[in-house]
Length: 222
Image (cartoon, rainbow, N blue to C red; front, side, top):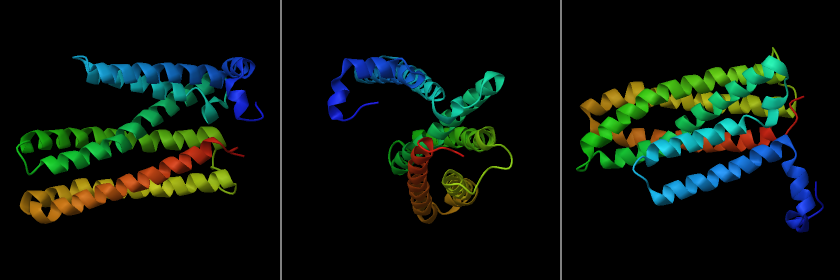
């Protein structure tokens, strides 16, 4: 909508952007991001719950732009709701990996009991997050491209690559939970380093998936 960086400070450009659906969502994203930052700095008593509500609201807003707005009527509402679920589940899965690694660092110290309890909760929530990502991701693809999904375009090929990487993450998560965790009960010193290494690999693959998602959001699916 502009011709250079000077247009960033143009009131007319800002007015034009804010009159679009994307601009409206973008404005609320900025407002919520600032409120989230203020809450994090103030550290109120119920901060975790407030931060959860604020960040969840930002993910829900993201479902109001992009490919989720391609449809109309009831289908559009279904698509946007499903996309919001997809974003929240993906954030819970990928965002939970670093805290898992942090808890693994605490296992050998005085916080061992609390760290194990936290890991058990991450595991329980992780199951639902992974299932949510897979189910909502499949529905998203079908709502965008129809059935069967178009894989001959650049967008479709990136989508296929994303799916392969996500399934790799699923395999790693299953191996961690159902192979390495039971082994940690018998030989923690050998199994725990493998668990940490596999979780780091899962996080790295997830970071690549985020890059692919960023590209997909800027491309036409057809």
